[in-house]
Image (cartoon, rainbow, N blue to C red):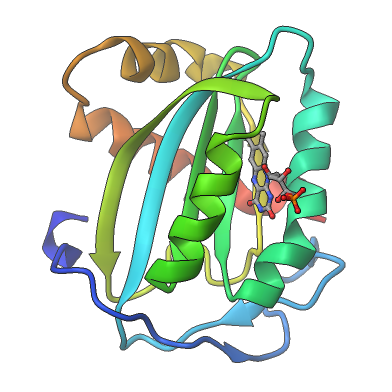
Length: 171
Ligand SMILES: Cc1cc2nc3c(=O)[nH]c(=O)nc-3n(C[C@H](O)[C@H](O)[C@H](O)COP(=O)(O)O)c2cc1C
């Protein structure tokens, strides 16, 4: 991940293609981007409000897909029961605009950006918003929320988990 890191500039406008996602293809059309061009990848963690359950989180991801697809954004939402991690990727301006909106959403609190980099290629080219429930990662996100310094290894573990399983909840 570090090798992809460079100054953030205007991103590549993704071109539409058919989904290559296979058996769990999402209901909405997906976008695939080329291997060139600069896009922003922003990852934040947060605490869901106490009453929020997995079905609510899944619903947030599902209802985000249309908006994200229109804006050329891709990503994944990870839910642990007591924490969220969300990766948002696309051109800088729509990513930051969406992040500002999400950060003000009353369904979660303690929103903290743990990664914001420019990358050459998307980690979630096929998912307007994937969804991964994994209660075993509660402590990982808890630590990212509590600790003064963010552990890059911890952020990398969350990204690995999301990229490995984004398809599971994405249909
Ligand atoms: C954890 C979390 C993740 C969210 N992710 C997205 C997202 O990826 N895309 C999106 O459009 N809205 C997302 N939302 C919902 C937005 O906060 C907001 O409610 C929605 O975009 C509608 O905004 P509007 O009422 O200003 O139009 C998310 C909300 C939460 C709590």
